[in-house]
Length: 59
Image (cartoon, rainbow, N blue to C red; front, side, top):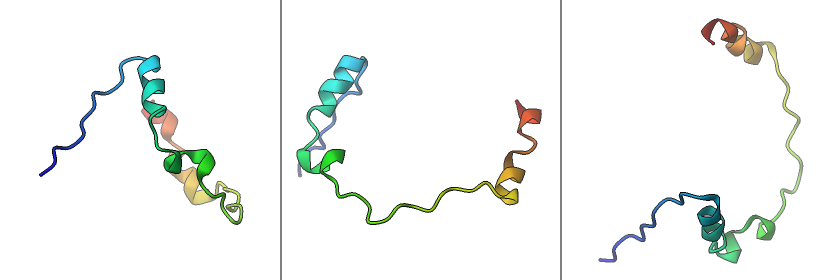
């Protein structure tokens, strides 16, 4: 049985950038196909607004 590949979490922005440099080309965003059609625009309706209407009371 193979041991899982466990790497420590990056602690600096430099380590994070170095980790990202090792992402295989097949998984990088610029190599992914673009969506065929744009998603419909997001609209705030009354139900959505009601979810946050009293938010100031909790902050």
